[in-house]
Amino acid sequence: MTLALRYAVRSDVGLLREGNEDSAYAGPRLLAVADGMGGHAAGEVASAVAIATLAGLDDDLPASELQIALSTAVAHANQILHDMVNADPSIGGMGTTLTAMLWSGSKVALCHIGDSRAYVLSDGKFQQITHDHTLVQSLVDDGRISPDEAATHPQRSLLLRALDGTSEAEPDLSIREAYLGDRYLLCSDGLSGVVSEETLHRTLAAVDEPEDAVLQLVELAIRGGGPDNITCIVADVVDSSTVPSAPSHASVMAGAASNGGRPTIRADSPAARAHLLAQTTPQPAIVVDHEDPAPRNAHDEEETEPTRRRWPIVTSLFVLLVAVVIGGLYLGWRYTQDQYYVGIDGGNVAIFRGINQSVAGINLSHVHERTDIPLSGVPSPDSSTIRATVSASSLAAAQTIVNNIRKDYQNCQAGYAAKRQFDVAQARYRTALHNYEKKYGNDKVQRTAKGKIKATPPPKPSGTPPTIPAGCPGPAATGSGSGS
View 1 (cartoon, one colour):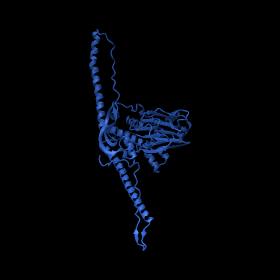
View 2: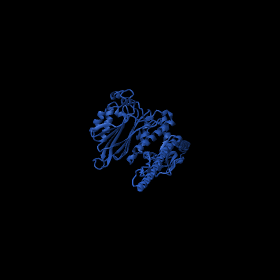
View 3: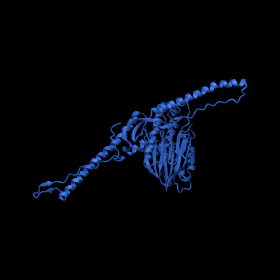
View 4: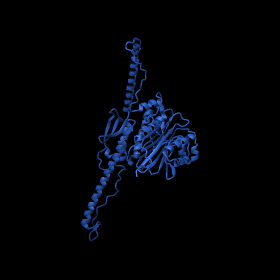
């Protein structure tokens, strides 16, 4: 049996919002919903950045790497938002929630921060599998208010955790087992805040097709007043070899992320300027539109002279266009030179300056500092993260990351050294004991006929076997790890 997904996604602006700050992605191995906040372009930028960053995970990953892949992508998205806020502090209030599920066979990693939600309908039982990071949820958890009071609390939308670029991202991460016939719902609070859990359950249980289900769920939120953007994904776990309808294969973006992964914002807004500064790929060319005159008779002096006068205007526009493009490229280059990340060079951990991308065959990064930490000796969680590269906001931050990696590496090496010493002591003890038993026939204290001790067995080494830190790759990894 090969498990796969049949899914549908829908995003609607609702009845009261001017624009859609929600973003969503649905693909064969990745489902994600992000609810932007901050108003006037900034919220949709944040949600689109989160979704666009995670979209690259929609690939065939080993189950053991699902959580670290999600954690790394979320940290990278948060770093991008941090850089954008630094470029334009006026958008410092923007942020986004994120709920994502990454699949590998029957294993699914769940990543969640904020108050978007994930539910599962399995064997007729419907339950929420995420925990809201809101003030009212913390009050419910502490027993200070009831769930019914939370639903109408004036501060029910106040988030305690989100991706905002100003603080470290702290998503909840977990691994679940997926079963044939399970149905998952991911949604923003524009749906869960309006439609009751009982109605969600009833709708998902009654409507067979995911596409029909998302349409009906959005309609229910609209009927409930549609006070916020409404985004939802419905995904069914199916057997790809037996299901009557084929599993979904197309990857779909919805909401603010659907415009080629970039939100549509006013070009003169602070968010737009910050967004453009954060782009590492070339922006679309500016098209200068003007009417060409109709073909003219070469002997018509009255029409030839105005045409000649048009050339200075066209030339000026062209020069302006070139200046804009060159200026954009320079700003983009300057942006890359303020970025650092930790990656691999020649099999060793290294700090790179720039961004891990190339444009027209030109690499936008170079090795700034190469360490003597071999990747083969780094614990597996760190190793997976380094292979995916770890972004840093500054050189000092990159060096802190490397120092943490070095500490983990050295802990592994120290563990192996202690284990070797323990094993050598045990081997010497066994050899000495064997020789003693061979000489005297047993491992007891030997006494003379008068009761005096003439020989004692070798003492057994004290202590227990040293514990090797979790994730260490094996004692074959070498390197002192003392330099940088």
